[in-house]
Length: 334
Image 1 (cartoon, rainbow, N blue to C red):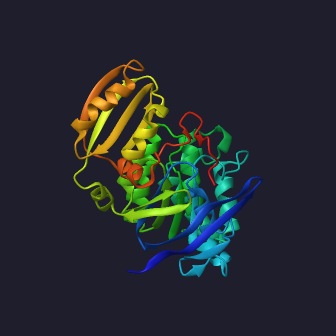
Image 2 (spheres, one colour; image 1 turned 90 degrees about the vertical axis):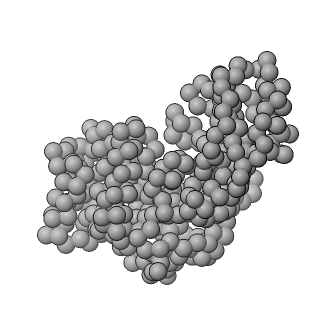
Image 3 (tube, rainbow, N blue to C red; image 1 turned 120 degrees about the horizontal axis):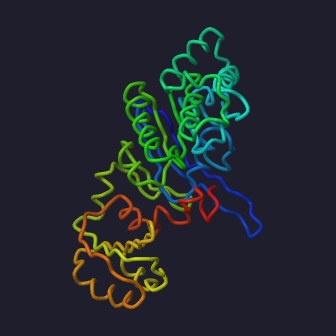
């Protein structure tokens, strides 16, 4: 099978006042042509830095990447012709220009011939349902429409490879669903694009990706299909306890060293999930720890998820350091 992207021991180091940070640490993997490959990890894992190195926005300190047959260090210009880059948020557009002006500008930057560019823009405006907004300034568009335009911008030169970084951050559920369906059905299945996608959303990775790489602290911890990754936990089950309010994770500090515990706070509730072959035997111990500190709303035995596997492999939660309200983390996303 032909390879769309080959990552070879890629490393990126940032110098900080207190020393250096290995944002990407000797990463090595390959992506097949026509595959959607997902990088799943929390904020600060190094996903964005890896995308920037592959797209030639950053120069790696060691190793390299071969993208569409071209080396990012030796032939960066041809790499850029082969890729379309889509980032979460609205940072890649000129807000004071119209939709049409943005597409004309980026098409000209990629050297798309005028007649071809005109046809390409018409195709993309129809594809993204933006034709009636062609003369609207970007600053007046909704977040969903801006993300649609960002996709059109990434596709303006019809690249075979797409690098998609956190595509649904900040979008409402309707547009997030639209973007996921578009990536899977239109870009991959219909247009046969090779896609590298980063996300910290478990459901997004599971729905879209043929294979997933767990990324933590700059390293690729494990790669596999969803089924392959879930088999890592074997016969383990999940004990889930739902509590009202926030539960202090410190009360589980010593417990976490022995057991794989995932504690998440969602909409004013705390969910305590523990991987174990004998969930009943741990129940009394958990209840004793939280007794008097919170109110238990429910106790369930459930199937494990990709996030449970991620916690098992890394000791981190996918939402660790991530602020849902502000779409950013407490840690810097390198």
